[in-house]
Image (cartoon, rainbow, N blue to C red):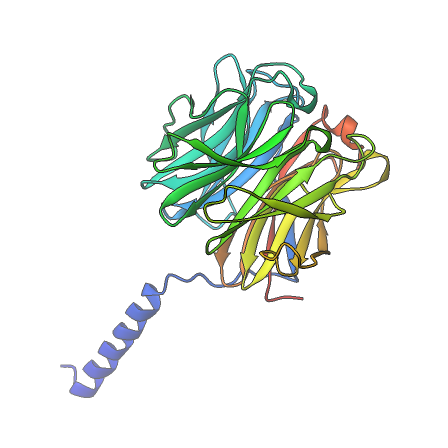
Length: 366
């Protein structure tokens, strides 16, 4: 028969084990520095691109465009959806999403009304300089299990696509750009289905505005707008820092970074403003890099500097980044890249195989 002391000891052990088991915070990944575990997640000899990441239903979800040999618009191209139940160590494909008779690209993952939702851009097949003539649609599809996805439907007027979607004070907001890369707009929706344009963030055909990130700081919105306004579309260009206060009817875009941030993903970690985006080298060579913005972003008169923190393994056609926190000070990052050994320039990379890459960022490490 067990004595009282032994029973008390066993109960204490059981309580301790139960408490440990209830701790849902995963242990930190075994990182070796700020950037570690760079690896190819997917390769099939085709041109894979345009990634995004999100946590939903207790798993990590990754989406990207694949199925074609290059960037030219094609109805053969489709979105591939993957699920990971171990914070990105292993993945299984759950779905392929096609847009009948049209191309689909630039997917963004969000959660709306408990469902996993993908917004994307759909254009008519063919090549489109400055996206002109693409007849862009902002399209949306949702799933309750990550496996079954209806054909995406258009959610806004033809010739506009969305880039970044943000939930703020119960309303959905989005940035988007139009065919011809002439304007960047600011949109809102209550349900994610019916959208209206609130204002123009940037309006200038010579500056070639397009992909625009978006953050809110209370009643102040800040957008980072890609500008392909170098001496040619292959040159560096700039990034405009645009600021507006509620009701966000007019934007001040007077500040410019002398770097063009392509395919960007902007997130905040403990007050630090981090952007992962495409980096431009001479002769149209490209990399994907991690940057930090320093300065008062909400003050249109304050100076802003851009500090490069590290460079990811990448070459040729690259970037279009996904980022998701995985606990502690760590993030999982996705991007795509041409072959890093061959290191083609961007023009060759657009029509050659590219792979999907993953890595860890650990802000607890130098």
